[in-house]
Structures are given as structure tokens and as C-alpha cells.
Length: 372
Image 1: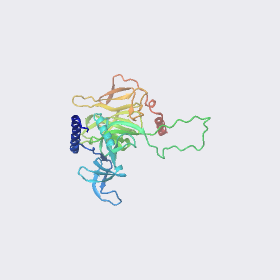
Image 2 (image 1 turned 90 degrees about the vertical axis):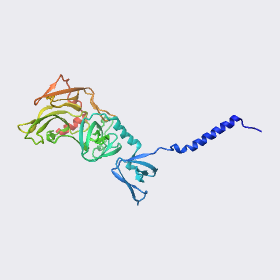
Image 3 (image 1 turned 90 degrees about the horizontal axis):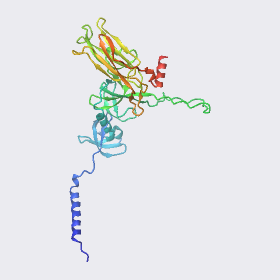
Image 4 (image 1 turned 180 degrees about the vertical axis):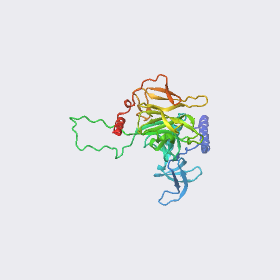
């Protein structure tokens, strides 16, 4: 007759005790982590069931977090932080992975300098990348004040209006080389930060740069990208609450998306106290300038305002093909100082080529057509 050794009995007892401890402590070990989704729709309702006729359980709004209780076909059963449970269509929410992209945008760009400000024309969703096919989440309200951080230009989706028609007559390949494909149509996006600290991409055509109304009509067909106060002059007869009229430096660009620079003109608008109107005291053209513009405004300790900005001095200015952001090559800083209403250039400025030499060919064609 075989007998188990003392060592074997002790070994078996230890295993049995370990299993009992694991079973008893199982309630303290989480079986799974919670799954969350986030509402990107403007606003919708949770329903008590998935059916043609159902009852509203709760209202949920843009940006709200919901815990997933059950997955269905095209619907999710979710629970709010208040404990309300109901069904929602899955295309009205984003998952945790997309939400984390927006969180990373806020973290990675938390210390980015603000190169301009703008106002949103209408309600618009923030996107996690430039382009119309990227994911969207936060809905920003009309007239929201935005901080501009980075500009990018990406290909515009093809539409029936801009798709070329096929040629009616076949072309012999023996005598003709294949024509080069036309350059893509580009549209601009801005990486912005809103008043709540959210960071994301917005199509540039949906916002207006923050430009004073008093000089907006002096752009002469150009777009004022940014305007910055240099100093204030006293004119009691001016239409100002305190009689202090600001004078500005403004940077301008053509009304064209996809330009490999931020502005190509610089102007200084001073106030004529006798005629009570703005006048152009300084104009610099034909440059490839890049934001931000650095301004030292006049105050009690500094009566001579000054400003500076970067310009491209080589021919390696282009758009990054991967991200669409502007990637200038060699740049130099040009600095100016005001003496009364006269603007003086400071230091030796390196020569810079004309803007036309650095503009992509399809932009040059568009300018020639516009002039003709």
C-alpha cells in the first residue's frame, strides 16, 4: 500500500490554501476596466431602448463623458456620471483613443507662443489634425475668441467642380509625353487654443483674424493677418472714449490658401491729428515673412516704438509634405524703429529674393489669372 510522503501532504495543503485565498480575495481584484466614450454631437438624448418608438432617458451634450455598459449594433448602452442609463448611436460619440489625441494636443502645445488672435464666424468642431477627414470633438461657439498657434496647408478634397473632365480626343503616347499632374488645391488650417484651453485644428476660412475696424478698410484688397499696437497719440476730437488713438503695424498677405509664408507685406498706420484719419507711414513689400511679429510698444520708459519679424532669405521655403506646416529654410530678422512718423531700418539687412521666386508655380499662375 502506497502512502503519501509528509512533503507531498504539506505541498498539497499549501496549494489548497493558496487557491482558497485567491477565491476569497477575488472580489478585490477588478475583472475589467471601465470603457468610456465622449459625445461629439452638438446634443442628443439617451433612449430607453433601440426601437422606432422609445422614450428619452436623459439629455447629453458635446464633450460629455459616458461609461459603456453594453455594445449593440450601431448603438451603445451607456451610463452618465449621474447614473442615467440609456442607448445612444455610436456615430454620435468618439472613443478613448480619439479623446486621447485631443488631450495630447493640449499637453504638447501648452507652452506654444500665440502668434495671432481670431474670432470664429460660426459654430465649428475642433479636429485632431488638419483636413476635413480628421476626427472632430469639441464644438466651439460662434464669436469665440481664439489664439492662433500654427498654420498648415493640406490638399482640398476633390469636388465635381474642380475635377478636370477627360479629354474628348485620345492622345497618341508615341508622340506626346504624359503631362505633369496639376498641383493640388490647398486649404489652410490653424492650430488654435480656445478660451477653455482646448487645442485643435480649425479651417482658416471659418475664422476672421482679429483686426481693428479702423484700419480694416485700408488693406487695399489684401488680408490683414495681424495688427499690433505701436503707440497711442492724443487727439481729443477723435472718436475714441479717452481721446487716445492707437497706431499700428500690420502684416498682410494675398487672399490665397497654401502660401509658403505668412505675409508678404508690412505696413505702419499712423494717425494724422490734423485730419483725424489714419495714413500709411511705412510700406514694405515683396517679402516672405513669418509670424510672430515682435513689437516693443512706446511707453513712459521707451518713447520710440520698434518691431521686428523673420523673413526668408533663401529659396528653400516650402510646406512640409507630411504635416502641411510652413517650414522656412534660411531666415533672417529684420528690425525697425520709429522716429516720429518715420520708420527707420536698423542694422545691416541681408538681401532677400523676391517672393515670386519662392512661391509654388500654381500660386504664380493664380496671381496672373487674377491680374488678367
